[in-house]
Image 1 (cartoon, rainbow, N blue to C red):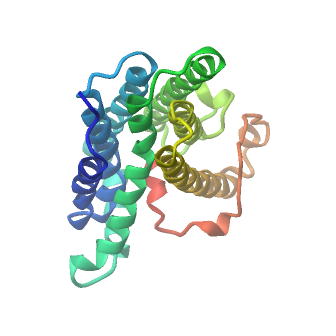
Image 2 (cartoon, rainbow, N blue to C red):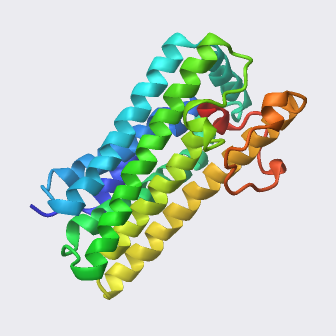
Length: 269
């Protein structure tokens, strides 16, 4: 069977994102995970094989894992329920329709991020060097997924034991922000897998450019998140000997001013 049409995939991303009309934060948490899950699930219905199947599966697993993690944390950690309400209070006041531009932008981003999965399912399986590169990129996507999942789980349980302590164990020995850095690797690798399945046609060029916009968009969001978290840690733990001796890799860092006091990225810290 052929993969779902692009408009169907767009609807699969748009509908979950509309949760943002109920709670603004839901558009970038549950809406995010459900959009990625739904779009990749539609692609899997076409029964892709090989690398294309593994590619779609990592998107499905990412969306399911994120939603499960967010639900567990919302039900068990009061801090994040309070933060959600803080974000809700920062939303435009009045009619909830004022949230529509933000929600549309989110849905569009999730759709663009899902295009590489469509490309790998529709394209012929690459052979030779391209095939080896596509397989390597797919492994990179799964590695990024695993790093983000382990980072979220390790930090959440560590913070439950001691909410004020700087987390430097587990994956944080090597990576300062493994939950974000894992996602950065996942989405960059996913884009590469899709690109390596494309041919030289006009349609493929358009898909490559559109999916590049999606990859660049989520990389910007994650860059802002790591930057803001890095700045908050410097303020909170700057005098802590453990912080000063922490040698974990920071990754790319921009200017801290790119965020805000109610940045939704705080929900993934």
